[in-house]
Image 1: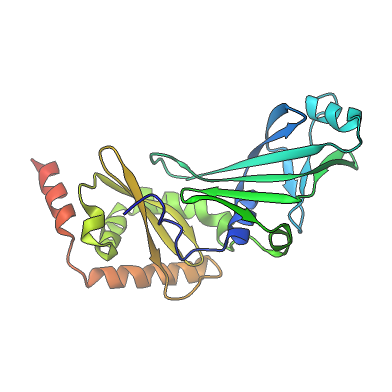
Image 2 (image 1 turned 60 degrees about the vertical axis):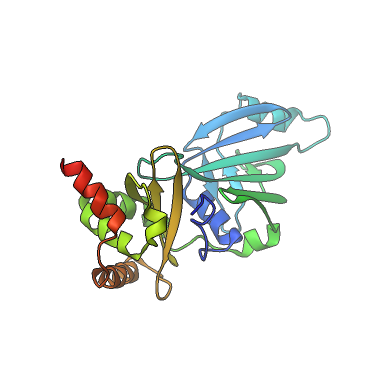
Length: 241
């Protein structure tokens, strides 16, 4: 098992990219070599353009107003971090490049180039596909759902490992819920020096939290019919000594 399999059978790149933007609370913007980081300063339009509410006397506003060739090109970067503490917490990064245009007291970046980075590598996303896509329907609830699962139901997480191949659990020291979307749940399996991700697909997509609860119950029911992995049995026994 490697670090590249966690997003297998998940949302497409355009949906994933829109989900990253929808969930992000902060971003970094680079214009003409100047880089500024902002928290709570961006909004996303229905077609995926980014509106930045930044100080007029800041470096970004000055670059937009004083660009010698008109509207400068801006690169907006978003980092998608797991809501639960895990090693290598950043799950993906997204870069949007486009012209920086003043609009009604804000600065607008309409993407003409979109690049999504995941552990498996960087993927260019067609700007038209990005514009047409919508975030995964569970994006807004993901952080709350994963935190609750990790903190309140560690027994359920352990039971779900019964659906993981035994060889993928070899030398595992900790298993943590890493991500969830309408297509499945991803678990992070940590070892002493390495980690990898395993995806548990749902039997059908979940369009809201109520459907997600049913999909999770179905996964747990499947896991209940499988014996506890020997790797975790040994780990539990070692921990009790």
